[in-house]
Each structure stands twice: as structure tokens, then as C-alpha cells.
Length: 582
Image 1 (cartoon, rainbow, N blue to C red):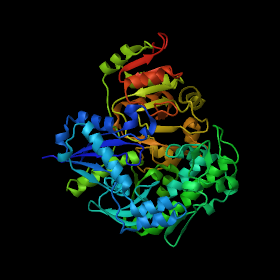
Image 2 (cartoon, helix red, strand yellow):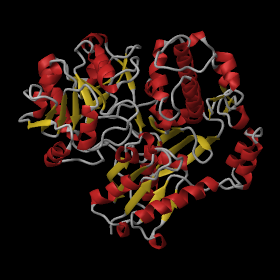
Image 3 (spheres, rainbow, N blue to C red):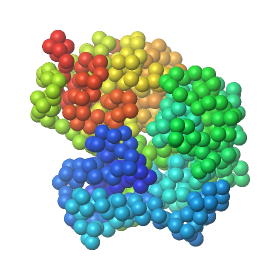
């Protein structure tokens, strides 16, 4: 009998998702936001995502052996709840709540999961629900999916799980061993999130914007060391400035933030608007530097010997999406390979929880080599969506999609690219993308201004052929998921300037053909036309929206922007008869 496991995330009221393992193979995974068209799908359960996974695999609820959830009760005998209570002494209700009713959030979450399962047709009396500690699920999502043979170090940096914020451990023979955890409010990712709020973005959504802003600033202008320290093996965040609750929170227009008025007294008013200006660019740079410095010191303290022994690190949690930190980890001489879970945020814990339970039941899970795990649509689906759409799109079937789309790109046109199964995780990797030719001057600004409607200073990223990666990036390190930045070689900076950031780096996807043949072939055709097997790639969505899932979603986005060309499977969609002639 096959071991069939369903993982469901959403414990922390954001980024609910579902993942399905059958005998160690990750058959399907999807995020709820894509189906309900609500970014991060806050306060929802992964109903539509789970329904997709079951339908895709042709399974019924009775076929599922267990449901794994990435949240678990924490015993009062452990240090976590006492640490939380002691550090939040100034908020007695929270402090006492951690001691007297410290698992209430788990019980609420489990009840919501049970409700969700019932809506899907599960019989709760016959359904085994297996809780997995949140940071253990993050660790499992990295280590078990890494494909590492033998021993490997494991790092988890996240805002907060039940109480833990940071995880250090190692994996060996399919088992995960915990070395050390830090607990709320001592959270490096939480501190980054608090400064993200101060810099005018939304926590759990805008951290990558801070990272994109940082290269425009000078970290030496402001010393942020007062915000957090790492001494004698312990991380401590200064809760007079950040990671605050209750009356210590800065409030504006009725909303409370995770930083304090004391931070505003020190740095000045909270940033607003879309301009990256002085002094906020320097604050972003200083926060990024503090994050990198402390993370690297903690990594050396707890995992340095393991890295020198094994050469491998598996990394997950929201902090693992900080690609600038990852670039510095790869630069360590003792790191031969870094695997960053491509869905390092909480959505990925659905995979981690299910993978953890699979290993516990004796079934190893496969290496995660791609993220094309969501829904796919046929040409017939595309044409039916066009027929239904009120904008009356003009569609035609292309005879050679890679060659014809490469021609459009080389002529300077951005193209919406909708192909195959939707990606899992936050990165567009050639399934649901907007593409441009990175050697065409101004194409990035055009996409920003006319299509994405986002801040002008945010970078665009390249996808490239695996034959190009070592030349352009000067590295043979695997980079299939856009989880690292690399310094771009001098000659390539001039060849593809539209995908090189202010600091001379690119967050790159290096693609092997076997994982996405049509996308690979498109880049081959573009290389014939321009000499560069590289394409500018950004997610197929508008600002503030989730990535596109269905043809109807794509059409809505297409007609809500200045895009001229949308290619879905073999169908070119245009807004005018003239554009339809390619």
C-alpha cells in the first residue's frame, strides 16, 4: 500500500497551502492565495489548495493515510514558554497567557483544520492529524528535500512559530537533530520585519523590498547594533525598539506596529510613499548589514564545525529568502552546497510537515528539483476562457512558440508567459512569468511603469541557460530557484544590464532543460537572436496581487495592464488584430 500524506499549512493566519506526498513523491503543492486571488490569503484555511491536490492526484479523502500540520503543542516543561513570559514581562496578559494557556493558538488552529477537512469530505473519526513543530517543519522542508546524502547542517531563520524563532541542527540518516533554538521576542527575522514596517512596507510581504532598497544606501551611515546582539551563544533583540507588543507599540491611524515610538524618536518619521530616498535607503542598508552580520555569527557559532565536517547546509524559514545573506553563505570556503527551500516561508511548511511524517514512517522523500507543482491548463481551456471573457480577446495558435516569442522579446516587447504547471513558492520560474529581453534598454522600466505598477528601484531577475550560468555568474553552484544572488561578470553587466541590480548582482535562475523544456528552448532561440541565453523574468501579476493561476486570471491581468502580448500554452492572445500578427 502506498503511503499518502497531505500537508496543510496556515497555522499563523497567513500563507495557507497544501502539499501531497505519495510514496515519497511530491505529487502536487499549491498556495491558497492563487485560487482565492487574495495575496497571502490571511485568516483562511487551505481549502482550495487541498482540493486541487486531491483532484490532481485522483484521490479521495479516504485515500489519505494522515494529515500533517506544521504547528504543535509546546510543553510547559520546556524553556520556550517561560522565556516568552519573562521577555514580555511588560505585557502581563501575554506573559501569563504563555504560562497558563500557552497552547491556545494550537487548539484554535487544529479546530480550523478539522473544519477545513470536513468541508473537503474527510471523516474526522477516521482521519489522523499529526502535529509537527513549526520550526521542525521548516527544517524538514529544507533537509528532507535537499537530496543531501549523509550528514548536513540545518539552519532555520523565521519570524516566529509556536515560540521558536531560529533553529540550528543537523540531519543524518533521514533524521533531524536539534542543537539550539531561540524564542520570541528574540527573532532576527522578526526584527527585519519590524524595520520593514518602519520603512513603509507590510511585514511578511515587503522584506524583499527592503533588501532591494539596501544597495542604494550606505550601511556605515547608521549603526544599528543597538537593535540586537549575539553574545555567549544567545541572540537578544532590544525590545525597547522592536519586536514589541501592547503599549510599547508605535501606533498610527489606529494601527499598531512591531516597532516602538522610541525607534521613531531615534530615526525620524516612519517612511511613506514609493520613493527610495535619504535617510531611508541608509536605514535599509544598515538593517541588511545587521541581519547578515548576526546571522553569519550565529551560523559560525552553532554550525561552523558541522559545515567544516560536511560542507552542506539546508536553510529554510522566511529569513532564507534573504538572497544577499545566501550569497555570503555560499562564499564561505567550508560551504560546498547550500540548499534553500524555494518556498522557505510558511507556505513551505506544508511540504515540510508531510515530508517529516513520511520519513518517520520509513518512506524517504525525493529531492526537490523543481517547483512546477500546481495546476496546468490545455489549449482548449485557454480558448474556452477567451471565449467567455468580456474583453473579447483575439487568439491564434502559434506554430513554434519558443521561436516566435523570442522574436517578440528581441524586438523589445514584454510578453506574459503562461505555460505548464503553476510554480509553488514566491518565485516565477517560467510557468507564470512576464518576460523581457535583458539587452533591450529600458525594458525593465517599461514593465515596472506599464505592467507591474511597482516601485521603480526594485530589481528584475534573470533566467538563463545552464550553459550561460557559469560564464555570467562565475559559479557552478546550483541555482534553480532564484534563492541566491551572484556577482555578475563584467562583460555580462554590459550585455544584459536590465537584470543587473545597483550593486552589480543578479538573483538568478539557472535552468536545466529537463525541468522546463519549452522555457529552455525559448532562451535558446533568444540566444540565436541576441547572443545572450538570458531572459528578464518577473512574476505574472500586478502589484499587490498573487501570482496568476488560471487562464481567466491571466486575461483579467492582461486587460488590466498595458501588455500587448500574452502567450498561454500554444495560444497567442492580443488586444488588436494588428498585434495578433506575429
